[in-house]
Image (cartoon, rainbow, N blue to C red):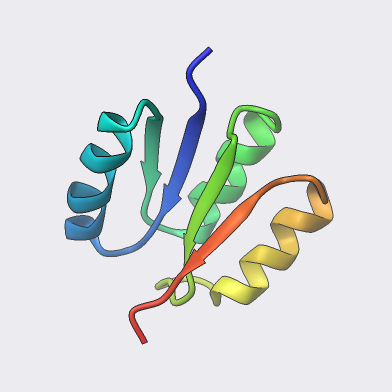
Length: 85
């Protein structure tokens, strides 16, 4: 089974940069561009993602607030937060 990563970032170019690198390393990558879509994906299939890579600044929600929501639903979910700051 190939580990799947959920990449959450509102910058499309970042998806295009990161996803191929992760795919070449043997991961499956799914991408969303906002916090709402992230929560919807996690609700639909709570154990689908080995890790969520999350931008700290999203257009619709602060990354820290989204992290809180993710961990409230599943405290065991691995999350890596990225920041360009």
